[in-house]
Length: 295
Image (tube, helix red, strand yellow):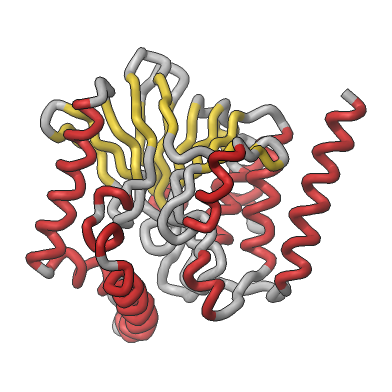
């Protein structure tokens, strides 16, 4: 840990609320080490996990889970134990969690909900939803969605080799996968339809704004009179949405803010087995129960 990282962890940034999504824990593309750094460097009253936190699709096909991924889970549970209101809204990649929502499941202080409502300090009512319900590919053609996920993974792999050549030539990081997504005319149209559909739904339900994830495209703008807020992802952009004490909303670009590099492949510590991960989570829950009993 360098001096700058130590300073961030000691001088934490205080937010009223933090929103993160699309971390895709369980994939090699997840920037878990940067996410852990972010979670150590902030305090908040509310922490919203806006879907695709754990990538169940990928973990079903092949197991990958290192110490950085384990650290992220422990930090989330640590926030919950310290009294932070932590709400987990499953997305399509962690849809296996949705079946537990009717049970009003709460694990170590983390509450599971299909969607949530948040009122900012300055009185704005925000709808919080992952957003996949407004993606026609995910809703009506899951096979195509999985195929798209495979293509995106391939693009990320090519991206690393592509940027390896760029850095040797003296050029900065440039996301080939993000560029390809935005150059495909139909993809750009789909993003626009997605944003419009979410904004229109929020407006029809009386909300002032909507917070979502899903499309890995951080954005904050007005759409048809509604504040559209997409907190981005922790695969390529490493962004979060934050609310300050006065209700001001900000997109936090963790890589740009801290001059980090996306050129290197995500670092991997020791890969943990499924049993080890479950044991770690169980230990955190036991710690939480013991603390509650002492209180």
